[in-house]
Length: 403
Image (cartoon, rainbow, N blue to C red; front, side, top):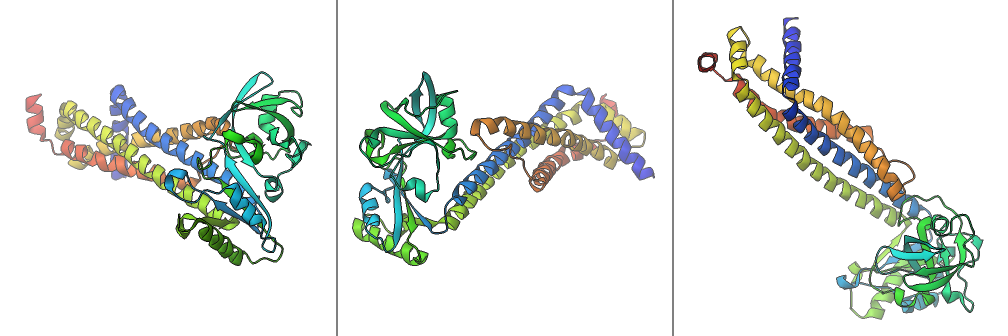
């Protein structure tokens, strides 16, 4: 009972001490809040984007392979229209093949009906929509006939933004300085993720994109749907051999990424884990800075409260009581700051949801919240031990004599 009383007395004294020094208390608490908030926000958004990419790859069939290119600067494989023609001459192995190239830069300025928007613009060959199971909701597809080179297709959300309250079919749209006629609007998929979802993209025919496409900017990709009954591993080997033979040693097999649906999903998960590790290190550094701030505040507090510490020792407080009071101050800072940081991180992630167009505000699981709470608390408490020990070692005689 006496031990519990001493414990409660230490907590009460720590709370009063923090209240008597509002400025350093607020500064230290703010550092902890910002560290936890930064981790919570970034980790939540990374998790949300990984979920978006996972759902995007889920639309691919198990009979589909994606041959991904690399940037020109890397010196690796960059798919071209010639490669697409080669694949189309393999009917016993390839049912359909399509080439997808992104316009220079991640986003392109669009102008239509007096409004301006920035969107992802893709130049694609005709079979891409069938392979990727993309449906046209209004109008018609890009087609192969005369004049199809200057038609474009809009995603449902970008169409509504460019032509609010009216049908965009037949209207003119300026894409990166060139004019196109809107041939159709894709059926809404409600896929989340700005610059990831087809609802926010503009599609141009590969033949009509002209100077807007600069091969090699992002590498592009070839999408291959296997012929009925084709063995996927043998098809992968044949495609790799074809391209390596064609380019005569300009790159090796390690530069050629031919991936099936599961490999793409695994790649998305791997990217998420890598982002998670990076975020964890950044959070650790931020928590370390916060813990150093708490330690410095407690060193100053120990010096300023020498008289109080000497008086407590003189009336019977032990060194353990003094040390416990300082540790309680650090613990109270964590108990106040960490939940507030997690709450603000959730609010910030919800605000960024609309910017990134995620389907819902991503929320960290309780395991991640518990991990960041325990790691931050452990750091702060560890750094509070030095000032707590310094305060506990003060000689009450010398302190009271100096006072």
